Image (tube, rainbow, N blue to C red; front, side, top):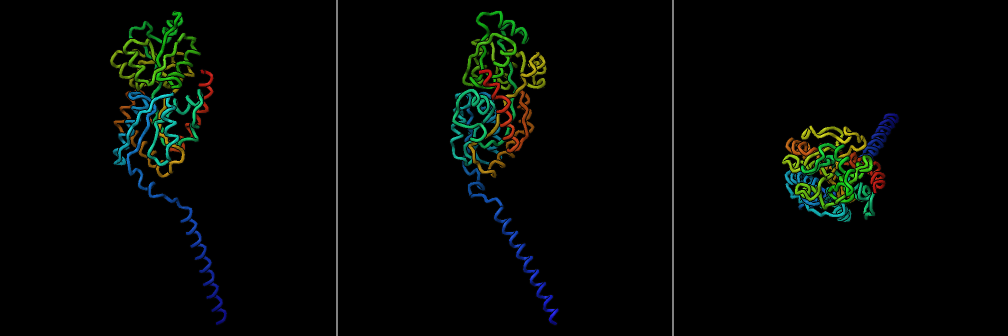
Length: 335
């Protein structure tokens, strides 16, 4: 009887210890579980502002509005695009970097505002640390176009024509420090072309002046130039994609034309101020990727030479860091 009671006591003791460990483990799991505030769970409970830091009509504005329209439908809440142009995208980006990290103020970020501009001039933000990088849209290549009245029909003829003129050939870009400006300067350095930069406050403005014969050439995004190419108001010589674009199969790449290091896209993306809750970031990243995967969106972007990407937020953040490391030294060398 004594032994039996002792065994029962040992069993009870073992059960008690096991139960205690289970309860402790459950308590730790509860403590470690993410805690979401009411604001995070309800997001978006009011309209969301997406700052497009370039003029209306350009690639940043176009992509921002395509995504904003899809997000409005997805979340049943207005996503409103607010154009704040200036400084190669810096003005709008600084505005968002200083905003509350609540997911209600976002920015159409990109290579111009978050890679090139910080490398070329002093800005008040760190392109990686000052932002929550949410989703990559993708982007079009840079294309060099000329007015139909310009004699050059090929890139080689364009270079020869620029060298034959004491004044050179002027080219319009979306603005100082934009990817169009950088690609043009790299091309000038590699080819020896006599080019004169005419900066604009936006891609659409530069193309409008080219179509009106106010400037002879432009290094611009293919998405902005596309409508002028189709109407015959501009002629394409080459672009910076890695391979030919299906919408314009007759236009060669810079690499095909002898400039193998001129491969780049003018990528755009969605970011917000540093510190946006991860629950909101995950919602936005998934929704943006879903929007870009829609057949009608893919078809529209393909027509403008833009290939959407499919990175999660952490992968996109690593992409931004890699782009800074790749392009910042080139931007500084090109001055």
